[in-house]
Length: 231
Image (cartoon, rainbow, N blue to C red; front, side):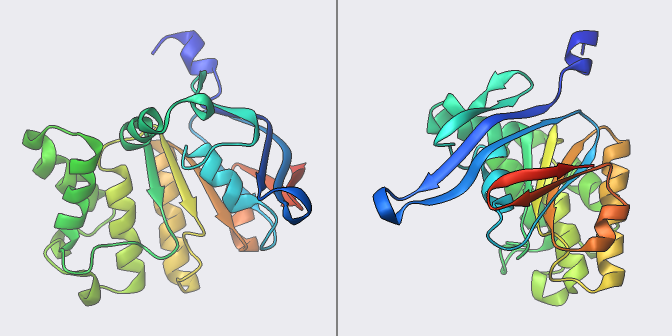
């Protein structure tokens, strides 16, 4: 990676708007959001339900397209790409973590992580090495044969994190990753996020939790579809 790439923000949103529906029934979920995220940072999007933070996260992760404006990943405008190309970028370069864990219930922890590697297009020769390394990183290699119902909520979320990081993405996006966890488990997950940032990843998460604001590097506050504060 050259100096110019290192200095370039990993992610930018410029004048991003997202409207659902038309006419008098239109809902303006985002109203011209702007942000610029340096690489290697832990960033929080905060706001009440309906403020637009999950909509913004979906646009940043190429899960949706803005009605107006543009989203750039390392200088590439991903918001204008075809759905097939956006899927490819998401599989290779972005890791997604959901509030509900989204694990396949009949698969073991290892199989859930390996399944993510299959989707990301990693060579089959790498499956076991990368899956075991990711599970070891989150402290669950000894329990990799357990299925989700045999794991605690915190352990399930750590499996979800292992699945998201196993293909070594540049960017992690997490939607309310600690909402279903108690405070102790939530702090464990946040410690993992800090460790991942030390490894060079960039993480953006949505949250209602005020305790998280003391840990992250930057906070963007959203209100009625607009970023009203950055700190």
